[in-house]
Image 1 (cartoon, helix red, strand yellow):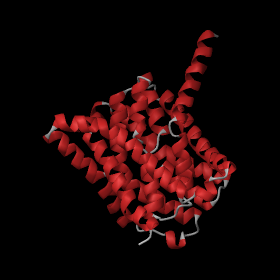
Image 2 (image 1 turned 90 degrees about the vertical axis):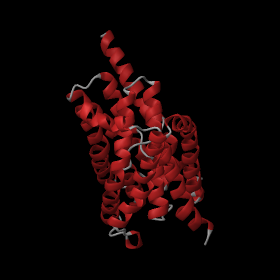
Image 3 (image 1 turned 135 degrees about the vertical axis):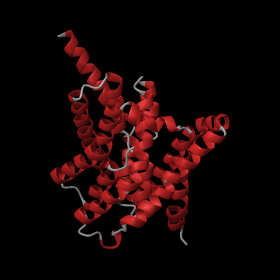
Image 4 (image 1 turned 90 degrees about the horizontal axis):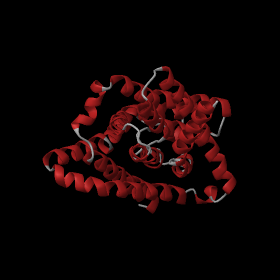
Length: 294
């Protein structure tokens, strides 16, 4: 077995399992009860994450006509909500932390069921059937469940049985998760080093990431404005739409599809992941300030 096969078949899945375990350690059953406590904000947030982003990706792909690998990468990225960094950003900008945690938790569960469908659609539509990339939706769903729902459930069980220890471990897991995501992105970049060593290629991929996320966040902005959500909840939803689960996207690209070319766009997105929501919220706040002065 070569180093690539060992990495994508064993290391990548183990890393995602650990990241999702850490997420489970930080969750409580109460985080899921927000579906009933704040149904409007949860429904709007999940609509933005699970439906608005993938549909925006489809429109962007048809308008810009990227290469098949970029098109599939965009779809996978758009269909992988629930980035671990969204909760930290929501905390810093004083958004609705409870809503952020709940949206991340629920979307991370849903992704095991929705990502295989979007992935199969992307391969069939943009890669002319995908050839060797064709995948079984059922098998992919089971595999993603074992790497998302299972570790989250284990983490929540540990927290229920030993809340003090789980809380202490969860704090360290946040840093560990970020480092593991950096490793995932760096490893994926290594197998694309010839392509990504060209600054022009990086800029090319970054442009697609920017267009996708900017369009999705603007649409989400109009959605939260139209539904008149409180400012803190609206800001939280914008952050959740702008932060994707790059670990799941890289896992799908490298382990399930075993195609480093598809992982190029998620790798570049990982460099922009933190910047985009900050820039968007800064722009909105500045625009509001100008409007108030007028």
